[in-house]
Amino acid sequence: MCLFACAGQICRDRSGDSSRARSHPAFRILISINSSANWVRWIICPRTLCALRLSKCLQISRSATKTGSRLEWSPFCFHSALNLAQLAFGLVRHLAYWPAGARRMHSTLDARDLARLSPTAMVRRHAAQMVAAAAGRPILDIACGGGRNAVLVAYLGGSVICVDNDLSRLVAQFTRLKDTVFAEACSRITPLALDLIRDEWPFQAQSAGGILNIHFLRAALFPVFASSTARGGCLLLETVQNRGENYLTLPKQGALRSALEPSFALDIYSERRCGPDGHDSVSVQLFGPRR
Ligand SMILES: C[S@@+](CC[C@H](N)C(=O)[O-])C[C@H]1O[C@@H](n2cnc3c(N)ncnc32)[C@H](O)[C@@H]1O
Image: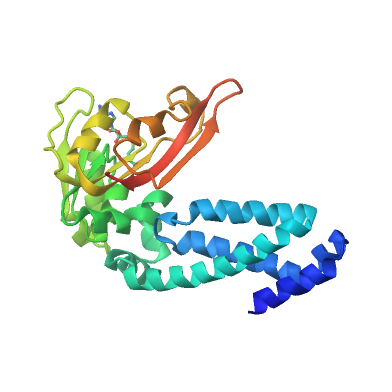
């Protein structure tokens, strides 16, 4: 009600003078409600379902800010109200469905524990969802390195098979974590020595509850990722970042999307351009369930 009252006031005040309308305090309040609601919604909405609508809102609010045109007030105000409604709905859903793993992470892990492990930001964000989607099946950490990501997934209740051709870092990690909150999680991790380029892929069709594939990109493995992941199990993939000459080995724009989208519903797919001008290499982060 309040929002619509403000909106009406703004529209009346405009009377052809857009700069006056833009500087009206009610309009400023609407802008700030609109953008904070958007940001909070980004954080709390599972799988950021509202992404499309959100970008539309931002577009409208940005152009309303710029032009102050009469035609744009009404959708802008409508979207502000819609944002607030969605925010409230998102909060209720979030509290009702927040997986037990996520609750555990936030209630028992402090920043020091996480810093000790240093899983990637994407893994922190989606580990609990991966565990829930795995429904008891093992999650494969493909090229696990020291297991920084696998340990968090295991801590949140997942069982993880850590695959690498050099397991020495994983073993050292287990020793390091022996007297920490992660000690029990390590017992839910199964190390598997495998050369992911030369050896035969050992996992049965639909046997995995999800796949972590961080900083080890082999497109040749995508077909077995798809066949081994059970329906609903999530793939979380991150390429290396844009550092040094990484751009020489990073994929071309759109390449990972077109390779993986037929098998995985990519709820999150982000690319960052890498390298000097003229190279269309990108670093990629993606996440989504098996179709
Ligand atoms: C950059 S590390 C990434 C480790 C881990 N995913 C992480 O995010 O911390 C790359 C890993 O790939 C492993 N690796 C390289 N070539 C491999 C191969 N042919 N088969 C299996 N693992 C391999 C390395 O041993 C190393 O642990």
